[in-house]
Image (cartoon, rainbow, N blue to C red; front, side, top):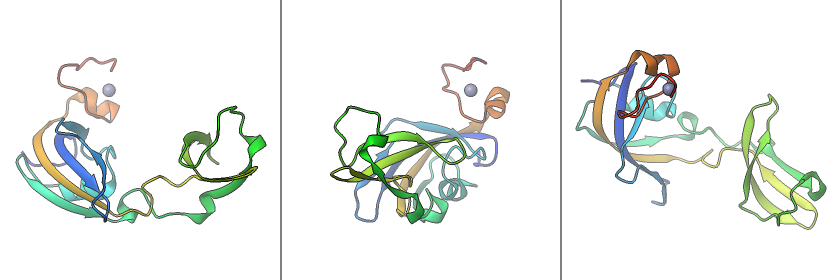
Length: 162
Ligand code: ZN
């Protein structure tokens, strides 16, 4: 069966940056998603279209088709008093903040200089070339519930309330 819209696709994948660092992996466990429902980044979905079970792909996804290019406008320097937390604030910490449209944005603290805290609201993988090795394990028709929900359900739990 070929991968197309409304198929549930199970893959094993490893994601590396251009320096060979592993950014993410399904760790030999299977990862299932609903094709055509934007469950995965556009570049990955595009490369998998038309493939079938048993295919192994090496895919290079550019930031434009991945997590976007870095936007310098999303870097801000804030006063420490804007942080309500009593926690020690250190570079590398991540938290969710409300974005301009009210949506939650993952923000990373990139530097702390006295009372000046610089944060970056870009996705941590924005601007990064994504090198995937993907093995297609299974392709099946999505259930009606999966298509309605817009995501894949685990095989052992196909209840409507998932
Ligand atoms: Zn569901």
